[in-house]
Length: 350
Image (cartoon, rainbow, N blue to C red):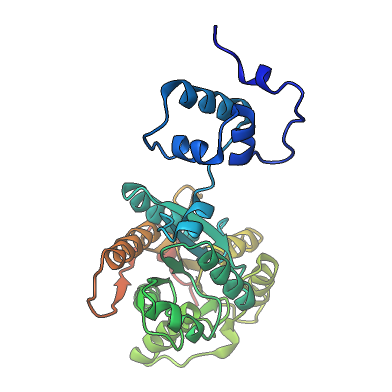
């Protein structure tokens, strides 16, 4: 008759906290080395002993710590990291999905962390993930100096930067055609007769913001239209600020006939504010968003594929892990304008 694990050590106190391999060894009445052999599917353990160890593992709920094991043995961790601004933003969650899908094909785990647009936190997260031996990192940067990664890059850890290029570091980068997308939007509005086109944007010092507002200036200049700086509102990433900017613009003696928003979150805030007005300006937003095509006047957007960005980042990362030594590359992901109705509203009659 077989003896249960619990009956072997009824008098022992149960282990406190997460069970260890030593706890398993004590419960099964075997050596730590025997437990290690069983856990790692090594030979030289008889079936009766192997069964006792498996019973102890099941009873205690033991889980092998693969990261700790890799740290001890100097093995690869089969994990990669992704640092983004905020997983709640659909743009970043789509990037994560694209990256994770490829990682699964390689039997890798993806660890996702949020920098909250904080440069210090970004650096802390990078160092924390490297201490856990992630084999590569994809980063949407918040900082303005990434030279601290140069030594790790030389040691062979690949870094892929997404959405914004790194500063003071040469490595692989994947960015949107931010300037081209903005040019598309403004040209579209101009083609419908709009001349007073407002912009509500985030931080213009951030790479994406700088490129998108540059597209606005560039397109107006191409058409010989003077830029009215009173129609440009910056640092409106928070919904309340974007709504306030919208109300201020719509209260001008000569309000804009069209508004261009530079991000999905700003777009949603602007649209909430515009519900208060009978006379609606034309509107185009950079980034598509859920239900944009279901509103009473469907929203015209500059669309792109963030999941494809994540997929491409993963492909480059795993190529680097496989030994690729091709020169660092910058991939520019195209955008496309989807005309749905809001961007096609004509300016009011004079």
